[in-house]
Image (cartoon, rainbow, N blue to C red; front, side, top):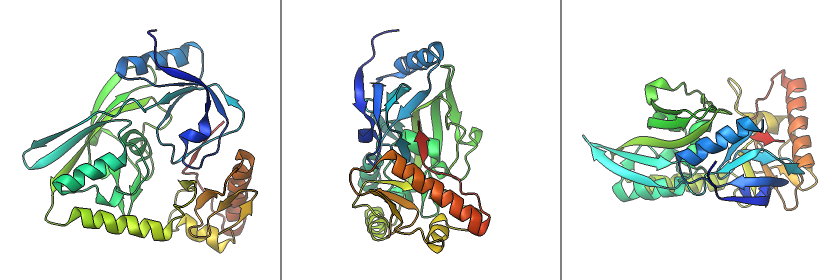
Length: 290
């Protein structure tokens, strides 16, 4: 295997938005497809979990030393814009942030991305989670995905070949999204103004002034997870320095110095209480890495 950039003894709290986590023995920073393939093969050879990391808005790392093959998308930030038959196509590598996409859609006044504009995400993570907001999902605008499977094979998939569902894609815990192309069209609306309104609404409803892991649980059928948590008395419920926000009950927040055990106890308390009160099994939207 060729030399690939890496760091040792990395503080994982820097790789998730809630700022909780232990230490990664190594984090790798590949720059191209071949380096990713080499890391996948390394994970198979030494029987370690292969784990891509981007912004980490839906990820929480446990305490202690973690020895997975952590693969950061930090060096995968190339993108290109093409126009064809009245549509704009933005091809972006896994580490391209939604902030960059926002700047592009505002510059060209493109329609289709605006509902997703405030999500703290990279393209790779958003595709894996099928990230969504305000009734839209990234699946709605996906044109093509370049995916490296868990054996190191490269696939180029059109949208119709991908089984996207609510907060689900077939890429979860399965290989690496290298690149995705989204398809947008020029708009008659003021897209910059719509994005501004969405960001203002998110700021009003979500606790964005503190480290948070975003939505903790997926919405079960016919219910909003935040509504159930609030009804169960968990809005503002706190253990140590971690709590369910009193602004939005489905958001976990870290008041500073929060510990993984506090977060895990909160999640388990919520799952147990909602199960007992409403006979509903909450499904986690965040991923806990132990």
